[in-house]
Length: 409
Ligand code: ATP
Ligand code: MG
Image (cartoon, rainbow, N blue to C red; front, side):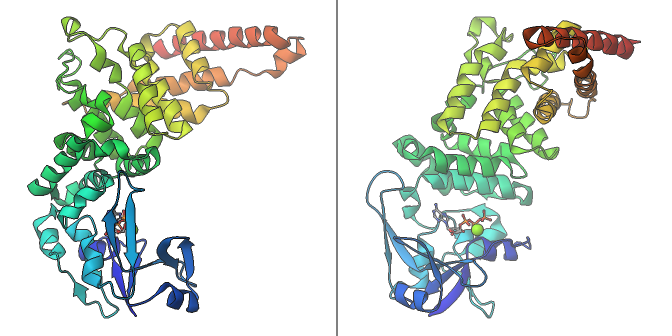
């Protein structure tokens, strides 16, 4: 048997990037031989094994054929006769379809090196179209390597467009889609992911609520970039520049969905878009079965981001309601993420990226003021049950009034 390094490890070494996990392909071996050598099988009907010591993945060289809709509709054929070239041709991109032996010798039948130099994300073969997930994968790699100058090859984008129009994207499971989306949002340029999906028509299938934002104007005085979709991409870009976590990036992507619902006659204003957008945010959350913390933050940011921007003008009672809505007493971290999402929203405006956002520290201070109200003295005064809740609220309101006065003094 011969063993080769494949996929991301080869690509990233050639790019001079750190290699974290290594995938291996084994040519000329059978399942029985692998088991005899102590490799542990990963799944029952999948020719992938874990190395007895390193735990890295070793896959038998295989060919794949599509046999139905979606990813379940794949049949694998792994046998000692399958060649390295046959295994590489089933892979998504040429830059992912190179192999390296233990002497560092490269096998590159589909010209991955050439495309690395040309900075092109190009599909290996027409079989690309057999797995719609590859549309998301290519967009994700575009988001990762845009900084190095990579773009999607025009013929690959054409294929991605055909896939988007064929209805195949709808066959993707929520789990597979979310895995790609969440990884893509954590890349250096997540807005490129959304832009590439848009360029090939996939955004309109996957998240039409975001697609709908493009072409919708906002008031130029607040939003020099005018377009709501362009704004959303900038907010995402800022979130990545400021190293925000997935929860915040997800909330940034969805915060303005309500603007896509505004009747044209009301443009460029978007009255109550925060509230109108909530059912859309909920629908997108559920479509991808986003984790609970992502879902929650997206809804809260959608509903309250304008409060964030107006923080310094809010009445103490409104501030208190905001803090209560976030349950800031038990969930301080979530409120911090809200503040950061609001700041990214403010920075995601053309020419205003560097403007300071005093609302952030003001909100942090308000949270601290409300949280420092102690329960113990109220208990000692004999408050309990609903009365205790009311008394706490009164004390917190007092604290917020004092905080606001001190801040404006
Ligand atoms: P990463 O750095 O994100 O791990 P990677 O290229 O190693 O990038 P993996 O998801 O680990 O990506 O997959 C390893 C290799 O398997 C890829 O480089 C590619 O050759 C192939 N591959 C993975 N998923 C697919 C797919 N859906 N269709 C085609 N080839 C795929
Ligand atoms: Mg990998």
